[in-house]
Picture 1: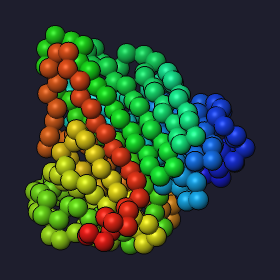
Picture 2: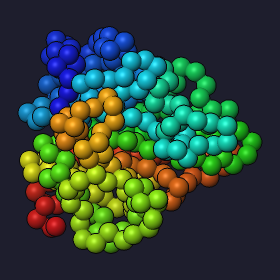
Picture 3: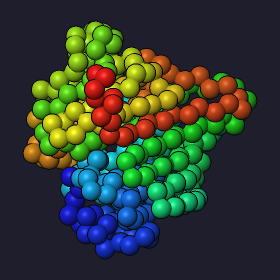
Picture 4: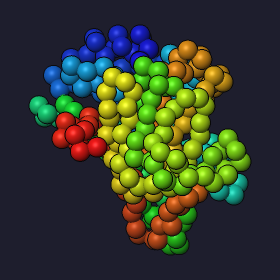
Length: 292
């Protein structure tokens, strides 16, 4: 689920501390309610594990060397998603995920933690991002807040590109998308309608036009994925041709279900306005299960 070297750092932590891992600085928190690791590069949540459970997020065992980004956890795609480059830009998923971020505040109590982060350098001429991460005994929430400090409306896309840890990606099911329209990136962005609930049986890269709550069922647990400020859900798995930093075997251990604003629902942010993109992950309760 997470690399052994990262596991060792988490196990050696009591309370909170900053550590070095793979050339990056991490904030690690290990408390009775659970564990959290946040990378200063990209303000990326790398690890979350509530007490008595297994990790909810997957991280590659072979992360790219700096200045590359780490595959896994919850990368921030900002202020554009995928290859939706503005004129003159070339960075896939935008600059936020590779940039240095500062931890501005860490507020803890016995039930969980709230972490605030902001970029160390200017990432856009007019847009300013902030991240707030909430983690508790049975939930993980990430908020990406964007403010337009310029004098004209600006078009943006973004995503919380979450890599969920699963026993076998090809045995997973994602409910809540039945009937939704989607673009298939593997078929030149052709548009289709989802027939029934989504069963993952091979490679896929779908951009769903949906603001509904999804449930990820992996055969061992059901995670409820709620969101705000998003009318797109991206479900991605590379199949048996994963990126160079991930083996075929390791890739079977994750499935990406992403809260996003994409080409289907770009945000036009007026001057002085803010946009809030939120992903809230929690176990599906018994009452919710009985109502499905």
